[in-house]
Image 1 (cartoon, one colour):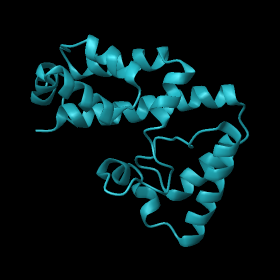
Image 2 (image 1 turned 90 degrees about the vertical axis):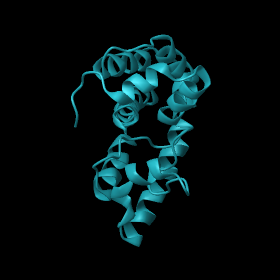
Image 3 (image 1 turned 30 degrees about the vertical axis):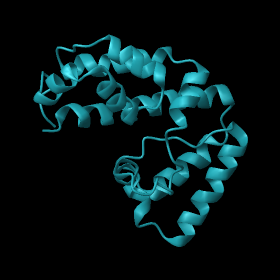
Image 4 (image 1 turned 90 degrees about the horizontal axis):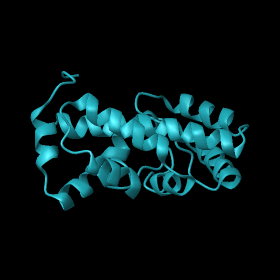
Length: 169
């Protein structure tokens, strides 16, 4: 990982035309409110400043904003075809057995039935078994508990995606 100071990618992000910046932020997180807040904070002096702004914006999102953000994520085990980001993030399910994939689908559906939205977890670096176990554990949460866990998981995903955005050459 590179330094958390200013990077050429951060300088490029800071100077992007507004619509291009909106599009780049939407790729990181589908919440329009989160994107508006980050856009309003430009220019960022350091990557850490950008990540702190992301965390602050995430903490302020309403339930509706969180739902909008979650809508941008495919179910675990079923990355969006042609979407390199979701495929990379869900790599832990790529080599999973058919039995594990079927079990994950079943648990995803149970989760969606209970909470009304896709199971969301920062999948980067997790195995299929870890994701299966996480959804099984989280099925026992209340909707309020789960909303806050989702907020934390989205925050982790956003940090990874923003870091990738501003550290690319």
